[in-house]
Image 1 (tube, one colour):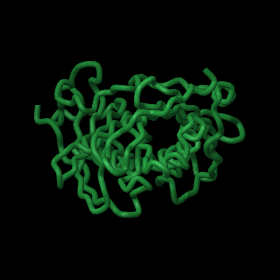
Image 2: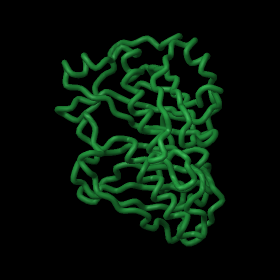
Image 3: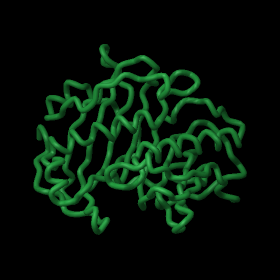
Image 4: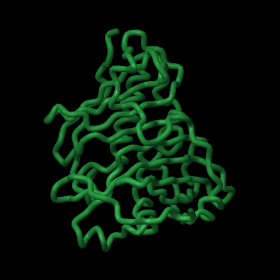
Length: 275
């Protein structure tokens, strides 16, 4: 097996970084999406095709402003994830893996770029089940103690050539809405500022149900679900307003980060909303 092929190179701009002083999750997804499209094109696929049914991302180390990175992509040849595309984002400066993504099979064959499942351990799901998630009704999210964390209109500038919202458009909305979910979970902005803490994602999975098109209004219904350890799981349902059609189900595992030491800290005692 010849393994990975380079599919993308990038530079971390200051404006891509958030209040934690590292690159925001939406721009990881932007890079994964562009790498996936280049990888498809390298192997006779449609570079303008739809987003994968699921994209499962794990974050391994931080990328900061001024950093340089490259992406390597391949198809998993065997095991549970045979046929999935795997993308590895490398921090060129440190040599560390910054993040990984597993994309559900799209039918692309890449006989020259195959890897064994045993060789991609960092990319394998850990805290979130890999199967496509079934959408939860917005009313159910609310009944379980959730809230509407976002109300937005899809702008043409956020869309691809087909007028469909790009990957970073979904994740940017989730990132903005997450702050409101943490407030419900009892870890609000006042506490974070007092202790010099931030909130960071360790793992994310998006299950796409249908595209979001320019001009459409989107709602995000969200709820926190403490895991019993340091992590908090956030469940988001992106739906179309006003008919409630499901667009994306997103699951996120996140922790609190001490911004001075850049290490995770214990989660305050919180109760699962609605449980």
